[in-house]
Image (cartoon, rainbow, N blue to C red):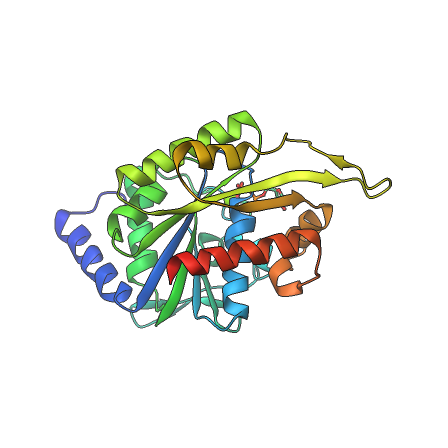
Length: 273
Ligand SMILES: Nc1ncnc2c1ncn2[C@@H]1O[C@H](COP(=O)(O)OP(=O)(O)O)[C@@H](O)[C@H]1O
Ligand SMILES: [Mg+2]
């Protein structure tokens, strides 16, 4: 896959366009910074949409740190090959998942790939997977504005929209701004900004602790004229749920984080109508 000829690339791109005629919308979850909650947001957004009866695909384009399968508790399953197509793993009814972590390689083996190889694997994941008809394809991205989100945006410019995740602190917000500029540059509409890890309620005294400060995401949205989709609090249960493969939006525990997330999903759906 290292050096593809122009013909091979064109053929892959043709397959992408063919498969994506059945996909209504693509939501790319991005942020400039790592560890701010992109994968948690992508997984829970996909689960929430699937629970509400939509046909959903979830594509993990984080090649160096594919965490989607682990967070969904499907890391022991593998993508099957059927003819020339790959069959996604079903994580719940209506939820099809594709990730490098589902290709049967040992979980701790790194993929050491350069840019063109990443672009090639993303073309394969879009064009050689039997996604079928989807209301939403949610795409989880690695941090930053590199090859992975660039490939998706360039291959699917008309149906893609971006959700930007940040924590409230300045360094994360600064990087989130870059993601917005990146989306604008590529003419991808920005659905809005989510402020994650926004305050922690002490389980002992119920005082709110603003571990990563507060309001940075909302201010960035205002400054840049984008929508603010809402804040999700820091919730220790979310860490445990992510590690045990039980997404909050499938568990539906009515926690503050769950309620915040439900509101965010409904804003995203409104934008996509
Ligand atoms: N609101 C939250 N409260 C508590 N932990 C969270 C929250 N959002 C994400 N996490 C945890 O933070 C870590 C990083 O989140 P992740 O979604 O992997 O970020 P990214 O994909 O941006 O690197 C994970 O362990 C995840 O479970
Ligand atoms: Mg991630």
